[in-house]
Length: 117
Image 1: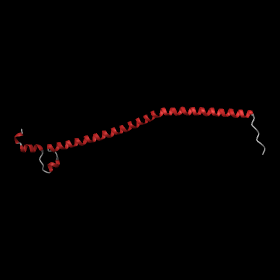
Image 2 (image 1 turned 90 degrees about the vertical axis):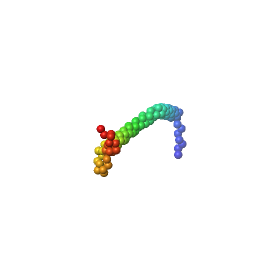
Image 3 (image 1 turned 180 degrees about the horizontal axis):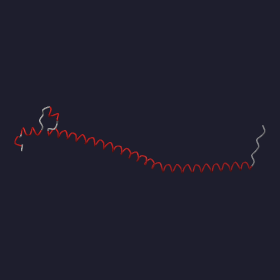
Image 4 (image 1 turned 135 degrees about the vertical axis):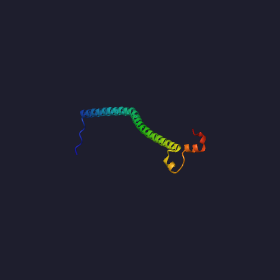
């Protein structure tokens, strides 16, 4: 094997210059990376807040709709109960009439005949 030739001064200077250029490029890339990380740290909380706000708003809207539906259903049931009570009190309840139960006005008239006008 022939001995390796020694690099010339010019080759060493070129290698040095090339290494310096690569180191400079690496430092610039690292600087850009640090800037991107800073930007991400600044933007991330706002993005998370925006996403959470949108999700909470969406869920609150759904909850509002469900609550309104539940309230409407409850009001309908209460009204139906009052209507049923009115029919029973006034003697318009057909089930009570068929079973022979007197209405409240009939009971009042029967037990307090003087209250009739």
